[in-house]
Structures are given as structure tokens and as C-alpha cells.
Length: 212
Image 1 (cartoon, rainbow, N blue to C red):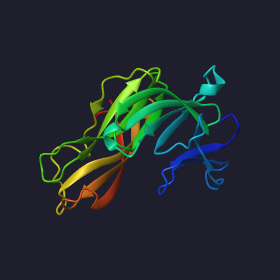
Image 2: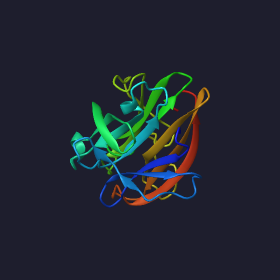
Image 3: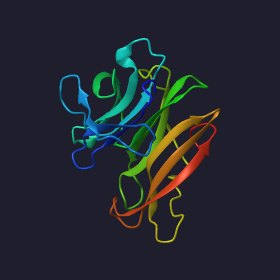
């Protein structure tokens, strides 16, 4: 970052407020600063931010996909937003529908942005709303490729462990690494018909094509 600071954005788990932290060493972090829309309202629900030092418009140097969630999951969308400082944000474009967890990254080799995001899939077993992840790419954050389902850790053949009813893809942060990709993936191991009753299992994954 040009101002010699590490920056991190997260969501307050209780009030869903998006906040920004800064640090000089990635160990000691500042107190959070709440993020706002340009109309003064607080930014709620998840965000994933990249910094574009080559952007000619200083008001668009910070780019993010921010979840617009009005508490009705059926109308939640991932939206392209920009900011001059990472704190005050402006909506640029409404994106695809999804649930909550998502990740935005820039792939310098292919000069494109990568969006991985969670959706629901009506399940054929006795647990509904299976969580799956899809991936789409874009050159400009306005126009996205058709979304493709990501496999491996949440494939249809779910009964992979004794006592586990099914596995759901809960989060998948993907980042470009040369001509390949690395992700920090967390899956939810469901044990009964309660779609929130399970353990999180974290994995580091590698891919050549973003789908497997």
C-alpha cells in the first residue's frame, strides 16, 4: 500500500457493520473505523476489497464486492463498489445473487478479477439449502463471465466421513499465485438435519483452473 500500511476489512459479527483496520506489522492493529456509503448510511454485511494503484481515478482506487443484504436472503446481491479511502463507498453496479461469504481477488497474469461466492442449492437429501460455491471472472468488475460451480470439497457425494450427513462449502478465499491459484477453504460438516449444526473444517487448496 502507498501509505505503508496493511489494511483489513471485516464484519462486526453482532451488528453486521463493515469496519476497516490498519497495521504497520500485521501484528498490532488499530481500532476499527466503521465504513459508510456516500449517503451516510453504514455499510452492512460482508465486503472483499482490492487496492488498484494503477487506477487513474483516485475515487476508485479501492474496489470491493459488498453484499447488499436487506435481511431477505432471496434478494441478496454482490455489488461492485469503489472508494477513495476504503471507508466511504459508492455503489457502481449490482452483481449476481448469493448468500453471504465471498472473496474478490485480482489475477495479474490474466488481468482479470476473480469472484468466488456462496449460493444455495435445493438438496435431494433431508437437509435443504446446501451451500455451494461458484466462481466468475471479470475484466472490469461490471461484466462477469457465467458462474461455474467449484467442486472438490462440497461435491455431490457427501458421505465422506462417519457421522457426517453432508459437507457444505461455507467459505473459499481464492488468490492468484503465478499461473495457478491457492485458496483458504472452510467447509461445514453437517451432522444432522439442522443446517447450522456442524464443525468447520479448514483446508488449503490449489487449482489450475479455478473449478477443481
